[in-house]
Image (cartoon, rainbow, N blue to C red; front, side, top):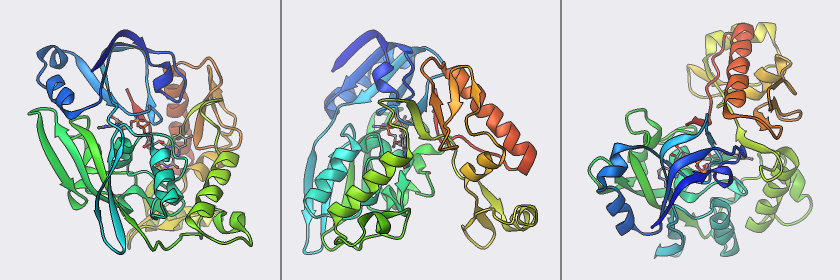
Length: 336
Ligand SMILES: Cc1cc2nc3c(=O)[nH]c(=O)nc-3n(C[C@H](O)[C@H](O)[C@H](O)COP(=O)(O)OP(=O)(O)OC[C@H]3O[C@@H](n4cnc5c(N)ncnc54)[C@H](O)[C@@H]3O)c2cc1C
């Protein structure tokens, strides 16, 4: 188990904030995690488990223990003529896992290429992009309940997946389960999903295969989103709000070009980016934080932002959007 004291989290958050934690603890096997969960000193502190910090906003230094999994590796746990089941370590880099699947001809995750983060967080966040989400392929999530130290294996149904949501994000469960492994079920005869974003156009006349879909998604994402290695950001800052149909019809009279996606009989989903754009907020700054010039859903660190600058800018965006549309935006990013 690796233990660091008074440790900088600069390399552990994609906003590029140089915040410090009292302790940084990294385990690379379940026995060490179990030992940590029996440690009285650990529980006398405040603590939080992180992945790569690509969906986190540290509001300041963390006076406690930041925990990280270095359990990596992939194990094939089952295989049939049509499917393969892979158990991946929670600390494994997500895109390396997707790449491994694509290279082996196992489909299901290719549209989720290049999403930053780790395998463990994919199951917490139910990451999604280009018509796919992690829950489409998740079979099991292996986790420890920190209050008792007991191991629990969650079926997909028990994970209660919904749009960017899971059991692990429910307020009563938030931060209480440490995920060690996720079992993904991949298809040996995948149906490719090309009708999202510009995937089809990007592939052009070439053959649509797992590799070309992955290459197309990577190239679209690189053109669209700022690279956190160059410009600190956490991807989409807000989730797309759900509004009831009646209210949407009202808004549509004023804004006929307002995009929407049906959710069920009562609700529709509206792109948060469109709402922010319509408020003229692209490029808006607060201290060292700014709304990205091209992607209004992305808040960037211009180089010298504090966590507070970013949170203040996010709060102002919410206030302005609410005033204009009476729609409440919720951050996708976790505030720590
Ligand atoms: C440029 C950019 C683009 C992005 N694009 C997308 C996108 O297209 N789609 C999308 O869905 N997201 C996107 N994101 C957000 C982000 O990539 C995902 O939310 C990702 O899953 C976060 O992974 P992470 O390992 O960095 O987790 P962190 O941000 O460190 O943590 C996220 C949450 O998971 C929890 N967690 C992490 N690991 C564990 C574990 N082992 N056990 C228990 N809890 C854990 C943390 O406590 C926290 O609540 C983007 C981010 C960036 C910076």
